Image (cartoon, rainbow, N blue to C red; front, side, top):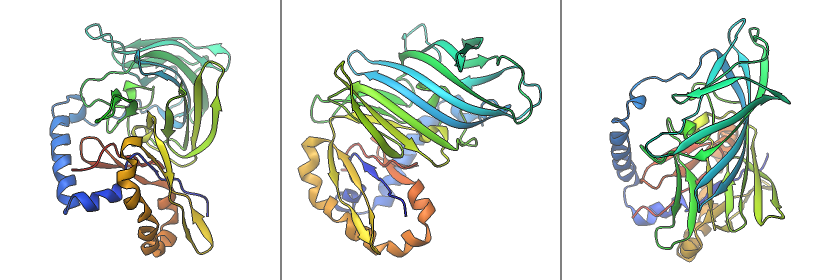
Length: 327
């Protein structure tokens, strides 16, 4: 069995100590969240993205600063044409707004070393391949872009701070239509990429977390640090996520049947002492579920719970984070 990494900013087991009825709390959080969602025009329609393409891979290379808030990215996307003689297609990417100055600007689009013509307007990035694509023909391209992700509406990408300190934090919350706020994509959960990769370069004070397995961590000469995360399982665009802060790492590995399940928590340092006791209970919790783990091995390796700052939970792919206790 391969290793499973469940990544926590705060442990979901703490909920058992602070809320007697977790179901009611989560239900109330969802009511509040989706009540706000109902006011979004975009959220009230089925949004398929461009059905003429099928995305198979997202590879994000992000460079982030907190102060000033800034994102510079290179998004490598592999796709296949679902039509014959496809002369152009579009990706969803929110453009800069004149009122706030927030949004993203595309610098160039390339397939290998060849620049591709593009237009970026009204939150659509329309790309013309060098030659029309045949049915099923594959194309890999890279979009180079920069800007400040939109903080309006549901706040899908935030430059924020801890609740009880001034320590900086950067995080994404893309469910359900927030991914185009910070990377180009086909904005529909119906089109799952086969795999994904996220590289995050930020000042070395940040511990940068994303989906899947941590492949490498590199200290750069300019005082930044690059984390490379790789996910090898199907993933919807809105489940790709990032979280950066001065996290403390706390491990509670679980061993059963002569196999070890690594469980890694990333936690705000000021609250780690409060949750150490709860974290030590997690291996016993896993022990009680070992039969379920054996029977649903694929799903356990592919899903984890993410706890949101708004007091609700969504499932995320191979990353589990929670911003604050559910008091």
